[in-house]
Length: 160
Image 1 (tube, rainbow, N blue to C red):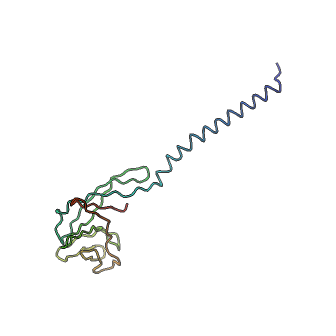
Image 2 (cartoon, rainbow, N blue to C red):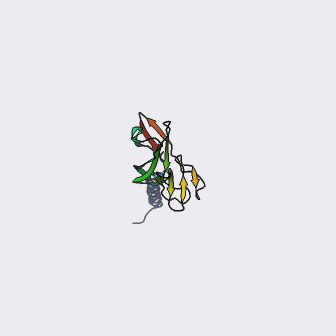
Image 3 (cartoon, helix red, strand yellow):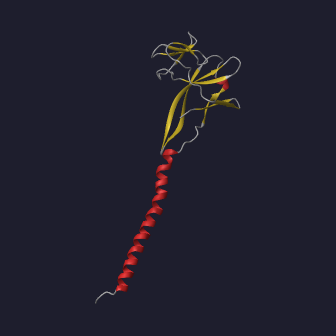
């Protein structure tokens, strides 16, 4: 039984149609998958406001270290991060939220009540209560975080 030219044309057309349909289906399914896998890596979420405490918990002119825990999205992974900040309430009621990281060598600073200054043990750097450089190798003040007060509660936005 010999095949005619008409049957071969149909067969070729059907073969081509099936391959094209498979290609279109593959593209149609791969684009959303690609977007789902790649887009989160480039998504930037604005840092949330994190509650630090009620303003009555902080004494004027006595910096208080507060350790904060918050959720941090890193691409597809959500992690619990922790950081420490110093809350400084001045005598006139103004609030500053300062980083506890030295701007010179990224060491943790601590408040020394006897010297009325933040001390960096790495290279004997000192910062004033407002975060400005007092002495030592640091060339710029402690980083200050944006903050707000709502209903007596202090909130801070950390750069993540």
